[in-house]
Length: 296
Image (cartoon, rainbow, N blue to C red; front, side, top):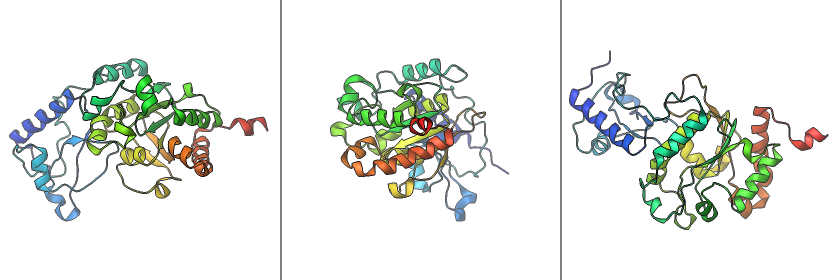
């Protein structure tokens, strides 16, 4: 039988979640301990980069996360209604994805939640069909994207457009976004805290669009979405089930595939054939016939 949460811990958790809501972060998950300590599981509430994954959380880390507030040991079965008193996401209950995405963009505002805002020109929110069956997620904006405020508009974007066209689709048919919405200095990879701060907004976008398929472009996007660290050779060529925490229960979630980032393909064109295999797997799942085969 589940124990009742200590009232002081309950208040502390509610205060922490309200704090994250003020930052625009709404998605959370609970980390579990190893089986030998499963009967004494601590509750850890923090922003998630994407997919729900079970990891280990020592008691010392939990206390640090709770900012020295009282930590109580509770069973793994926690009251489901613990966060009912908290404010729902602004787009909650909005059926029109266009309006819902607008609310998310307004909630993002002139974001200063992480250090990436210091060097940006424009926030790169995302673009495309709000009802798209196919969504691409890249790493982060580059110089061209930062200047125009739109993802994938530079050389890598032109190649992505060609990849989409080869699938028999138009750029307007899909939705395109990134793990982070501000350009990292020198086009470096987003740091962990930057991705974790920004990804809740991406999760909300995915929850609104409800695509059938997500394609992670490159290792950085894949590792952040899947919350796993593995080489591209292991990540590619298979399907993953993906559904952000708090999504509409009627939506079964998306299938996620991993392929090379267009910028990588520009550096190593030899891998274009492998990327095409990944896209063909996506096309088969979505029932898309390539223009070349259709002509035959």
